[in-house]
Length: 300
Image 1: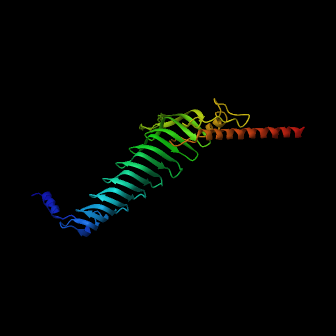
Image 2: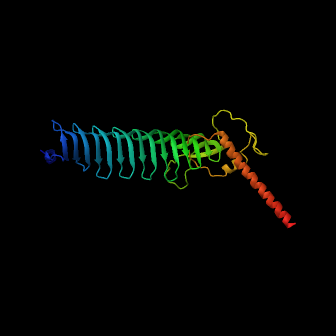
Image 3: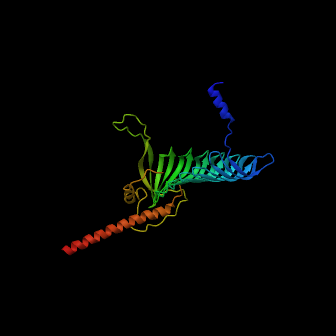
């Protein structure tokens, strides 16, 4: 027999370290009931066993510091459970065959959170992602971990409603501002040009570019409202009521390239907000005219 053969034979004679176990067993000598175990890799488990496998409620501690507290089925995380990851993130929710599956909440190391549906370990279905740094959140559909389909991106004083493809807003959508108006437009994906001097061609993902089209009052499908008599001599017309004063104010803002879908304010409230803004502008202009007239009279 060769030297290699002798070494292989000697290795087969060594018994592997099976760890340690203290707890209940059944008549066949299998781990069955409650028990504590130290696994060969240094991990530990304390909880329920059934026919030699982790089954039921238990706590599994990894030697790297991570741990899982929850339900098991035949050695796999299955049911309700909470996983504390080594990087500080945490998932609490449903598990199927060792994967996040069903409904659950995931808190990331940067304190972002996702609350919603999971499939095979990925965000999939309806869910809400909260951005801790900005306070913004995305509410909508997810596919294989990405924002995909109809969604709404909500910020402090405005929101975007539209469609997402591969995490980017694409196609028709609208920004809704708390001052009582909407900006409609379209997101188009633009390919980024390669920078000069790059030796290797690296494909860059396309960037969504917002193209504004028009500004309108808040739109909502509601029964027709009764006509309201004008509150002042100067009232906006229906063709271009808010696009002159309020529209100029909105377009002067830097609109973010973000996106989302939610309930809108009633059209009557939007009209009142817009009229209020225009009324304030008229009062300010009148005050300026009066001040100019007083200065002119005093100089004379």
